[in-house]
Length: 211
Image 1 (spheres, rainbow, N blue to C red):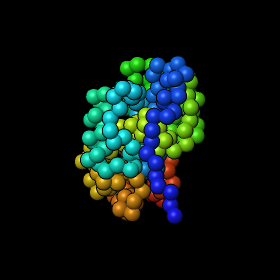
Image 2: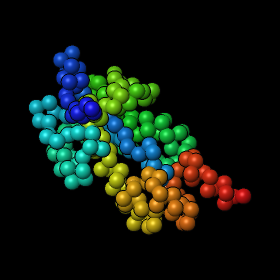
Image 3: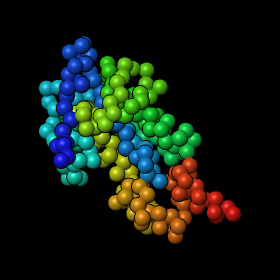
Image 4: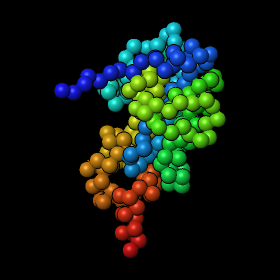
């Protein structure tokens, strides 16, 4: 029998606030797996006195609810979204590019956090702030879950916009992930400037074209 999924809560943030932190930020990224597009991160500082209802891991929410929660976040929380480009992904590798986007998102906050809760098992080396990694943090921390929502909405919009200029790859629905349709389009239509050349399915096509 499966255990019921638990929703994220404010436990980690509240413990840090009790210890003296004034502002606790959660940071998360989206877009490590796609073959195209940037990797996007968001950082969110929630107001403990005004936390919107419905915050959850973005993967657990439908599009309409994500948009509704994000609108409430924009009116009640401090939110910053940032990206690492396809070129940076290819140059640095996807993990380091994800950390770069996270650092940019935190730097973009209008108020400096005293502590950062980072989704995953690693803290970006360049963060230069007290931080705690939380594995599956988007399912455990409300601040990280809020960041996951803001990041996904921002990146999905980027991929929708790119799809208008590069039709046929299905980016408006697959967000650049390696779906069957996206892979087939790569074979038929070729590689665009927005594809990640360091990722094997793209690299293999380029190598085949060169040969």
